[in-house]
Length: 401
Ligand SMILES: *Cc1c(COP(=O)(O)O)cnc(C)c1O
Image 1 (cartoon, protein in one colour):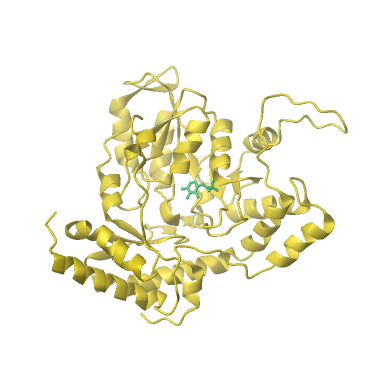
Image 2 (cartoon, rainbow, N blue to C red):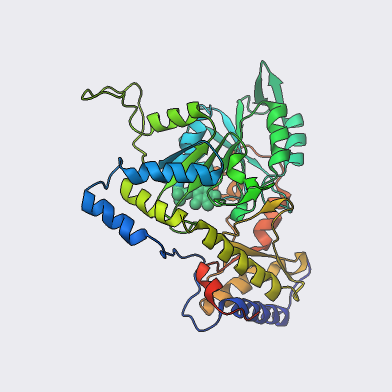
């Protein structure tokens, strides 16, 4: 990396802010990274809950949201839950992860991916990313597992820790699908389920099908910053009736159905999504195609605005995929990565809420002692990625790029 002079930094910062403002405009007080939009039936569906008294964990919107979501996700079953972290924790549990296991997760992800693994009693085992998808790199994962783990009696074990490795948890970064074919081959070779963290990827497709229809289970989030929101919420989606039934059971206190008796057949959770939140979800899901079209339009404008600046590369969806472009990003060239913090300060000074990507999880003290492969690509992405304002409202502006 070459050293950047004060003059270089100031020049890069002014071009960066100018190229952002061409897309976002400069008249707004702030351009947030995300903001929810309620342009559909939200008011009437929520009012209906209040008028009818069905506000809690049973109600017709919960059932409808689960049906609609399964269809959109290209799967047979959806179970809606209180948030995405809980959804991933339950997905791991029903997917066969046990306390004391290790679970393969990317180091370049939101902390919730690893937290869900920890809450299920297992240990995150960090995997490197690919420059092409920003998600797990299947080829490097395979060669790593071939040398760092051993298969015996149908169980894959980490040679260094002796612990079983029992699941692969890819995450579709910013909505861009990972290489599911490549990961499925690795999963098959080592006998592991794929339990995807699809919190950012609702509506993204892989080879023409919803990305959530690949792998064994996907977990979604409907937090306020996601492509649709229920206030707080999450879901697991799967083709397996057995996994969905089990997920519903253990998220509703494992109560055995009966007209009046309270019998619970295991120590379980209260993680069901309330009807009030599901009402929002039904209204939001109906707008998903509009939101995706708007996000794709914003991505196109950023790509055009930054096309003349070799220092700032926008990220294009991987081949054979359609991304929901939930969160836009630029990647700094290698020789300008030292400008990252200057660019973050300059943009935030004028109300443009740019953010660095997450701190890679293996560098957080809470996860620094976890097992991991070499992580050079994730570390480079951490130094070079900057997330850009991605509110759908940007698409309503006239295109000034
Ligand atoms: C948002 C998010 C989650 C967690 O979802 P919550 O609903 O906030 O618990 C998990 N993983 C990733 C990658 C996310 O972006």
